[in-house]
Image (tube, rainbow, N blue to C red):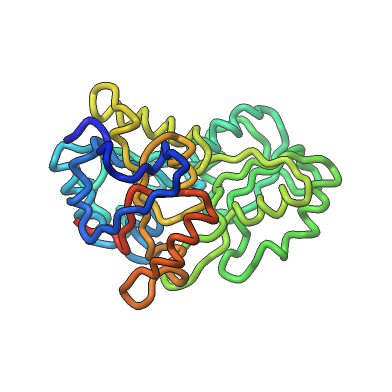
Length: 305
């Protein structure tokens, strides 16, 4: 494996601000040898919430077989072991990755720092594992001293608009919110489902204070890079790290902030805008990068070796 990204290619995470044209890839293997490690998003790249993508799993496996290291990095608001169980259920092979880091892991650290506070959990019961073993008291919305937002109560049917009155009551009491999942939407099968980030965005727009766990914020990348170095048995330069993801707002922006290159998978949450049948809509793609102020190293429709 190379010790860093090629000097001649367009910049990704670090970037020079000169709006380079990303490389359009058909095969990940054409780029893989330039990197020592991959930080790979899960939902939208490895699976869509209903089924795993075998080609993506195979690409990560082959990268590891070539000496690279893979850490899966996700805004799932649950601890890593819970995410691993979901990957097992979807039959994502263990040999596709070295480790997992989740926004749920970071959320637990943020919640743990509020020991003794009365917290309101805004989100579904399936996310209660984020509180397991922590010395906090979960209370109703009216008694809360802070809010931990892991998502909508019923993400199949609700939208952030359904939470306006609740958010206004939090704002009136100046409650701080921890957002366990900065994603706004995520794929579930062939649908887009609202996530915690959509509610947190609404609260912040109203004037509320939000503490963000997960991508695109640097702490989750720092944690992921620690796991990379643990797998590698030594230091790994950020120039040798590639972030793979399907979100302009979280994956690509997070890579840029953390000084690593990125590979954009266009068929994920932005697929309806950017992919026409099986072809990339290049003018729309480049305009999307320009508006988001992110310029990946390369673009693929789906992750394949």
